[in-house]
Length: 127
Image (cartoon, rainbow, N blue to C red; front, side, top):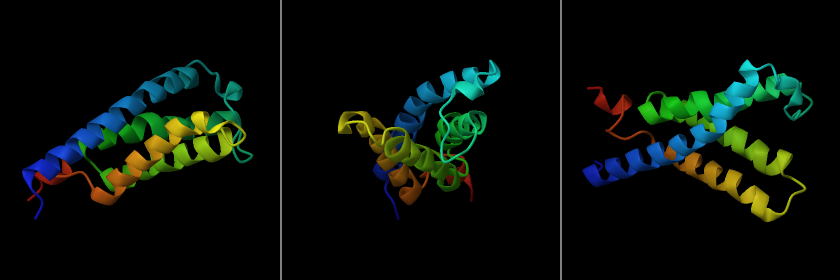
């Protein structure tokens, strides 16, 4: 049985990582709304618009679900994949300093995936 301190730690982890990720997702949503998808980098042969849609899912939609604590483990997979692509594909040729932020986010969302939402979440309110 987890303590309230652990559940509070999970809340801080969810709010911190997902809240900060929104600062990256909101501008991408604006790009998508403004029809700038073709300007977004193509990843793994996908058109820029599809890459942008997937980035919005990983950096905006999934973090909102994580903040709420609803479908947290499933939702955390999206930013994990998005940050892995950012670190190892988009910034593959860049120095470590450019890879560091996507890797930090990747590890944060990996921890959220492994630990779950905790009791201070929509999922934790059940039962």
